[in-house]
Length: 118
Image 1 (cartoon, helix red, strand yellow):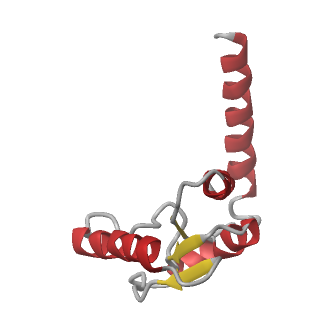
Image 2: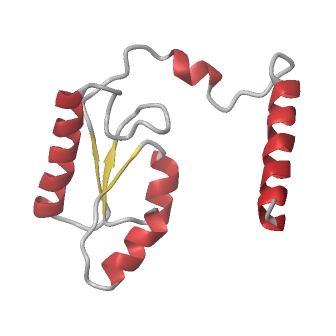
C-alpha cells in the first residue's frame, strides 16, 4: 500500500497510511502515516473497539488536513492489552518449525493448483 500511496501522491491525490509496520512504511517514504503499535492486521485498532477505531481514523483525517511537513508520522496513544503478541511474532523455533513448513507447502500447492485451474 505504501508504494501505491506514493504513486497517488505523485499524481496529485493526497493519502494517509494507517499501519503497524513502521520501519517498512517509513522506508517507502509515504507522505502521511498514522502508526499504531499493534499486531499486524489491526492498524485501525482492536477488534470490536469502535471508539478506538473511530479515533484512529479521525487522527488520519486530521493528519490529511493538517500535515505541516513532508513524510509526517504520527503515533497513536493507544496500547494493546498486553505485549504477549510480540513474543511470538515472526518466531520460528523447534516448537513450530514443522507446522510452519507444512503450512507453507500446503499454500504453495494451493497456489500451483490455482494456476493450473484446478
